[in-house]
Length: 496
Image (cartoon, rainbow, N blue to C red):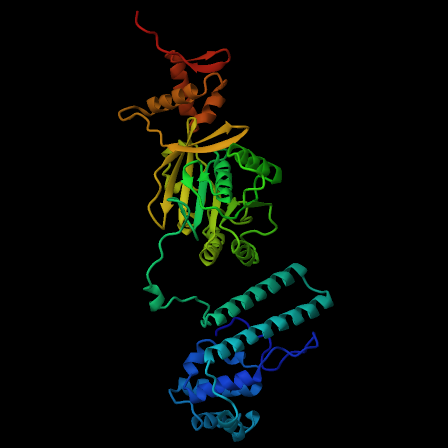
């Protein structure tokens, strides 16, 4: 197996600071070598082990000779192997010809070779971890050098060992988890949904919207819906499971306030939801320890909401493809555990009309972010409405677009999805006429509440110059007027 660094224990075991022998099993090593000789099992063994899997110096020398013979296309048997060891000048170092007689007469040929091979792979990794701990303890005792750099290197080495161990267990030392042909053509299981017709299990979902447009309320409603087995936004059936919210934006008090408000509107008891929250976690998507930690958490969860991608990726430029690295970690964990990850994103900054942006291009940052997801929901504000659209569904058909209302209900806050509102056709109208239509809709929806031009503009967004021109034109046409300090739509006079 190729490495960027020499093996920690090299050929000679290092000083043992723990006062214990490093893990090994010489009988198992002998049994594996016997299988290579008697069962022509070199390829089977070499698919998992290399020289460093053998702790004994004798066994490493014999293994090198086996590698030479196979590379030369020669058989590996009790004639060719001792001869090759002699050519290498190692015969006396391994105990002479008598040792090879031992492989025949003393060492049993293992029936369960794969189990023996896995044992050696596991012992090799344990030795390296043990040496890492010993060396780390020795260096820490000296008390010199950069502590942060020392910890980063320690974490990197530990992750490398974990990957090596996982690969050895899977019989694939290259580190890639391969699926063979027999498994590829097995019958596919039926789709498993966490949220019916919207979100499949083991998937990564993006939820993007502009600031203050309700995406956190929508995410909290999903959290409670899964935790109680209710309907998300009153529309999509959810299977009940454990749901966790990792928050790096709202803070403990605000997140709890929202959860309590949504729960009250659903008339759910405080002890019923299977939900947990963690605000401002001490690990980010960019940290080396994030993947193993989120894997441990996701193994016991059905849903994990992360708010937000930017807040959990400090120091990474949103426009860089590196933003995808953290999302790829989540996808790997989702595949391994079946957990769903819903990640909140901010929409692109724009001075134009937000509805003019293709919803598939709504998310701020690199296109690699959108590419990494299995599913994506975009939410834009239109007048007094939130318009939601599933813009990606890798595992199936996209849900139909729908509107979302966030309203006070029963002392709480209800998040409600409704059929998408269809505006009358505006074909043939000028851009100013289109803007006037939206201004009228916003004022009509909130009579007496919009007291300034800024209030009206916040409701519809978009180009402020065009908005002022539209509002001024409506006032001049006497379609809109300030009445008692607030904008109202003036009904047209009825003919006499």
